[in-house]
Image (cartoon, rainbow, N blue to C red; front, side, top):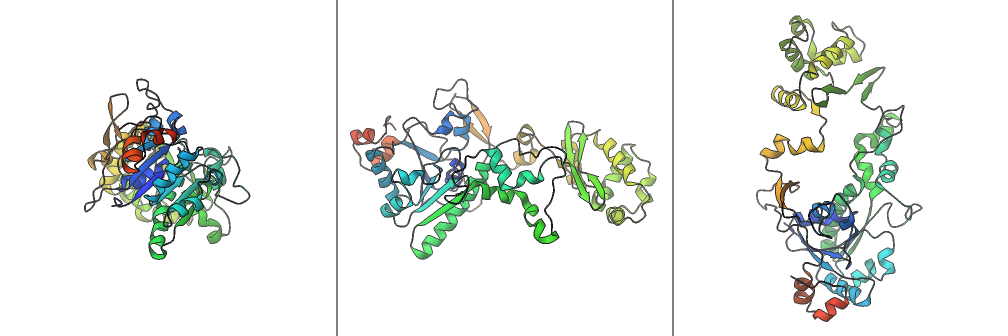
Length: 409
């Protein structure tokens, strides 16, 4: 799909997924690292039996479909080699921080001079300029300042973020989309484009409809933990089951499907099936109209029923009978999720320690232009010879001077 295009990836863990997405879409991605390797190579978790600097699962996970070279861009030779690569590239992605690349003589102006049609994507915490541009940032602060923490967690306790770091992954995803959008504009205008991606801004999208709440209802949404505030009524959303938790709301469709299940398991008597107009139950109790079975009794029945069944059982039964039930999955649960298995989502990857394992697959399955993994994460400097010497025509001495300390195939 993107096979005609070349991407220079100068980023670290804050942007590596952006170039991986483009690589998964078929682009020729060249991962440019300093001679001592990207900082993401020093991020855990680590494989115990793999040699450094190839033992980082963080690096392995986000650097497939890339070739790798080393250049020391703090040297004149390294900068010159990088700009020669830019002449043959279509995209540059970096995450060095506001103005850091420009200080090295490698900002957008330098790349545009080398290649007037280049798409230069800069990923940073708060954008390249503005009052917060130079603020320090972490996944926690970006989740807080981006907004999603304002609607996450119990109201009587401190707000929370998602347990698995997400901010830079969202920024990388936005960067990949922005890069392609800028490229479409470049095709129309013939001019290179500078793309400024803020991780904080990227996090705003994760708030979903909470972003629009004030404009629609005149007030912001407030975090309510595992409770849905419906007017004066509080509805519990999260229910404990036999092996974890599921989310369900007693809507008409949900109750129409679940009451027969509860009768079958002996949770409620059979007269519950015909004893209430379940299709309109939620509308009536929300409007404080008469209902046959009190909301407290309904939730007690749901609680007792759900405790008897696993997350998988609840989901499968819900899918079968068109009842909306969402399991709260752990990462381990997702690796066993039968839909992903049946769709062939997981891929087998050869790890640097010599073992094979299942890893996350390609973002889409396309029939006309199938996507695949052509190569896994490169070893440090693995393609120095192929790219710097064979493609650019540099001598081995020139490559070493530029920081290609391990010129090998």
